[in-house]
Image (cartoon, rainbow, N blue to C red; front, side):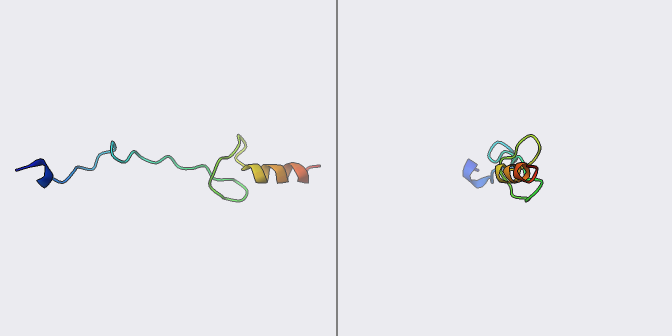
Length: 51
């Protein structure tokens, strides 16, 4: 029997588990968010609304 005949086992070295991408608390878009959980666009909109 050769190594090619044995199917590769499912291990996490080939496909490491994906970390969940952060999601904006206001608009729900995935992507980078700040410490408060809002994306840059929503954070700026909230700052303008408070002025």
